[in-house]
Image 1 (cartoon, rainbow, N blue to C red):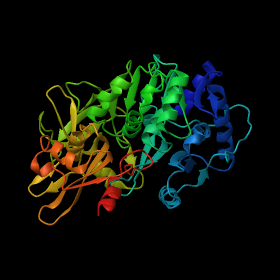
Image 2 (cartoon, rainbow, N blue to C red; image 1 turned 45 degrees about the vertical axis):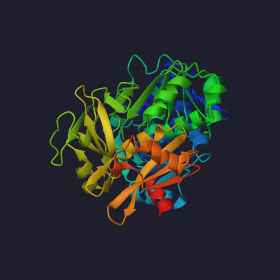
Image 3 (cartoon, one colour; image 1 turned 90 degrees about the vertical axis):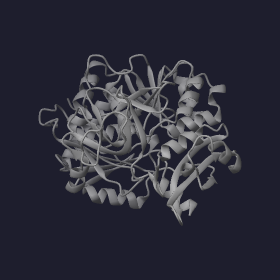
Length: 466
């Protein structure tokens, strides 16, 4: 199965059914999606673009319909799609396009189209052909291009029972150019519900979108969930239609998950843990007050293990490096064999996180390996510190990070969004954190700095703190 092949099947079976809607901008039926993508395939082939050629796709969140056409057109031509958000700095876009050697760039309003007859002269891509290069967020280092084949992208698609059959509409606000956004694009072609989104996320607009479409499935990143709760959208909008609320891209703080359960009274709150490198492997956790900090267990044929420094498996309860095995053919770093060999190990992917498994196989994250604060003789988990800070009712959001310390080497700093006085928060944390985990510095911000995928940019936080 390939995604273009799946689109062709759905267009043939139900051409008039709406696949995707951008609220206020328009909709795209399966028939129109396939026809426009097919016209783009012919236009690209006419320009000499074909197998293995990299094509940059620079689109914004209001351009999801054109982006969907462009992505499937590039794949149908046998070329490799390189999704990039138009919110990235121009220099970053140019660097990524240069890194992958893009031979063409498509932008909204600039999609070529060529009429054509049958498709007998257009050889479809094979499952093992390269299909996508998706650049990582770069929050901890230089962004890397993660390459995936058609078989990887379409893994698990095309089954008799389509995902999310409980819903007529699936709402999200994920950006173009992110792994979460690509997941929503696959849902648009493979899942049961119509996928709806909006050009720009605000808590009120997104809640209104959910209410308007009576969405049964909703996906957010934790930052969006936190903003919605802080804005009190549940008091102004009817969110009772939501039966599944999924959070992706970063761990969901336990307090936030609990508050979401109250704000979405009929929803099952679910946390998804994966990475651009590991997809489609993931763990899934239905929020459980007995395991509030777990990110769940692997699903759909994947696997998780905790590895020691030598790569050997560690027993339950022991903290080590999180490795995840994909049920599909694994991805790789484009043009970087050394990094590929370091991260991708015989079907396993080193996630860059530290964690442990309990006796029942539930995964708990301790920290991002690069975020662990080595303070004196101790190693401090920023996730653990953040969970404690989030428990204060006056905290909207928080992020912990390391700052230089004259005797300890590094110590804990915490950036807080909220109205809580610093001294009050220090007193509150004394009963929740060990002395070496207590922040030596607190700063209050109007908002935490984030990359275009919604993840907190801790490098920027360190610059603010210093």
